[in-house]
Image (cartoon, rainbow, N blue to C red):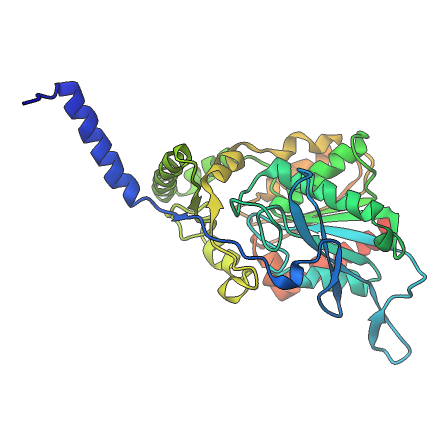
Length: 377
């Protein structure tokens, strides 16, 4: 009869314990992605009266992304809205959404405000999100997100059909939350001559500091809840590491209650984030999930390191005083580093209030539209 050594018994026991622990780790496995037939047009395809679907290559030059081009609206003699004059070229605003969100996640108030003000607008989904291709799904990769923004700009500048209606010398960027950091990074590369010139930028409650800094701030405010959440998150990441060895992807919740394994779990995050998601996940079956590898990148990525390179591009920064995800102090510091900046500080406002709180939203839309009218037209 074979007798196991003490070391072997310990190793087997640890392996069994890990297997039990990982079996009940928070998170979920991968899912199938079936793009809507309506979005199966490779170049231009109509999807409604208000926008045209455009498929284009993303920042990796491989993945097909899906975007929507919105024509500007103007008042006619009957005081109703109609498409802009076909012979008049207009400025365009490219919108970049936040962490884990797709273009059908509550961007319409901003798109409507821009088109009513006479601008064209272009929304798109990052690779692996929404209607865009890319597998595994829901991979948050900030450098590739930024590359996708660059790809959208390049496509707009080169597409002959778009050039007939859009003044491609007047391109504005608008980004919110994680996307706010992205558009500032694009503006930074534009200002130092590494990419085509951007005319004006708006960064709404932008993510500027690293996830590690955010976690440390949360621990200071609510140490027990924060440490509990970190323990649950690490549990899920260990499951992700074990799945990765097998070539599989494990997913961590994007939002959840305080103390959970979710990436966003400050008080109010769960309700606020949920309010942006279409019912039942919407047309593209959105899931509350980001690949476990996304978490490591979120912990280390820091757009603040680049904002000082923005010295000539007019930049509007919108900060929410009570923002626990993208602290107002960081946004205020960025405003001091950027050479040509304006700051809108919203008193008594939290991160998700900028999307739904009516008086706050109207203040943001009015200030943002006025800024683009002054700097983009």
